[in-house]
Each structure stands twice: as structure tokens, then as C-alpha cells.
Image 1 (cartoon, rainbow, N blue to C red):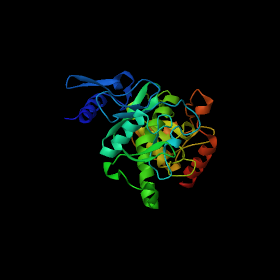
Image 2 (image 1 turned 90 degrees about the vertical axis):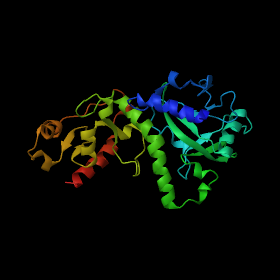
Image 3 (image 1 turned 180 degrees about the vertical axis):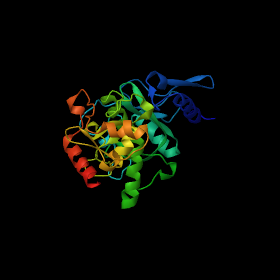
Image 4 (image 1 turned 180 degrees about the horizontal axis):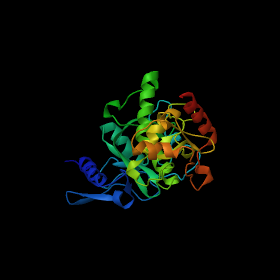
Length: 296
């Protein structure tokens, strides 16, 4: 077993006990292998980790970005849809940059620690360095070793869309979920249930559409039932934050879940985040509510 294989197994074990597949700062500092201690991540402020005794890097880290209106990781994705990772400083020959370049040259897998809350990270692994742009001071990343050396500038339209969807799913969505659930105090905005395992970060405007950015004002914390109802236009949310239930569903007779979980929510108002900047964007809600009305 190599150090990297042992690291992945160590993280697998830690994540098996995590409800949301995230790890705290202390859990991702170091681990033991064959009687030696290997540093997984360096001290705060340094993103590329190369443990002593290894020539190549073993992990990269992007720290948590406090909530803002702009997508926190937009600048880490190229036009081709692949995620990017910036050099440490701008000198390509700094030892950490050389250590990351060796991962590309030898096809070595890394762990990518994405900060989703202060001191809390979601590990993405294995991930590979598949290219480098000295002019832009950055490396190109992929989840596939087979893409090392690929010219990503020649991708077709469908290939770019596929890559972008994968990048959103693996990088953007975990951050979006954590920020939205945090804004809503880990509770459904409609029924107020507080079990994180039963909650989703629902998009107001789908991420496949214009203005569907993974930002908190484009999200609402909803339980699985209300998220499904919202996505399928069985439930709508007006720009004034009032809940509306599809008229046919209102007249349907079924069990207690329909009655108490959906029908009784009609006319209620969603619970809003305390911070005004984190509340649902009313322009987006209007667009989405029009879609609900048109669905009948």
C-alpha cells in the first residue's frame, strides 16, 4: 500500500462517520502510515501540501470564502469547464509548485480539500493535475487520470457541457449546500424540520439556466418533500415569500403527508435567513413563480 492509497483509506474511514461528508480542521492535519506521520495539509495560508519524505504534493486546499453575493469559486473554473488551481505566488519553480507539477508528470492522485465552512472541509479525491498554464500561473485539474496532457481547448460543445456539469456537481454544489443550509440555520424554510440529512439546498433558478448561479440568494433550504414539490411545480414561492400549492393538489384527498405536509402550507410564508443579503432574490422568485403558474 502506498502513502496515497493509505491516505484515501484513512479519509474513507473518517467520512464514514460524517453525516454530511465533511471534516474538521484537526481531522485533516496528518495521519499515520507504517509508523510515520505524514502531514496532509500545511499550516493555514498555504494551499499545496508536500510532506517531508515525498517529492510530489499530496493535497491541495481552497479555504472557505465567507458568504457573498458572487460565486466563491467561479474564478477556479476555466472556459472549458475544468477546475483550476493557482500557483503558490507566481514563481513556477517554488518547491510547492514543483511538487504539484510532479503529480502531473507521474500521474499521481491528490486530495482536494474544499472549504465549505470556517474550519470545515469537503475532501474531493482522487483528483489529478492534467495541465499547466505558466502564463496564467495555474494548473488544470480533473477527476480522471486519463486526461493528463489533454488539450482542453479543443473540446466540443457537448464535451464542455459534460465537464461543466461534473465540475458543478463535485465542486460548486457542496459549497452551495453548506452556505444555504447555514443561512437557514439548517432548517427547511417551509416546514422548519431541522435534520440535515433530510435537507437540500434548492435552486430558485436552475443552475442550467441563465442567472442560475450557485449563490445563497438563488437558494432556499428545503426538506426532501418540499424540494421535490418545488422542482416539479407542485409548490411555488411568491416574490413576497408566500407559499402556493398547485390547485389540483389542494383539492386532492390522500393521506396525512399530503394534508399536513403540503396542503396546509398553502398561504404560509417561508422562514427567512436573519441576514437580509442571504434572503431569496425576489427577482429570481418572480421568474420561478411565473414558471409555477404556467405549469398549471
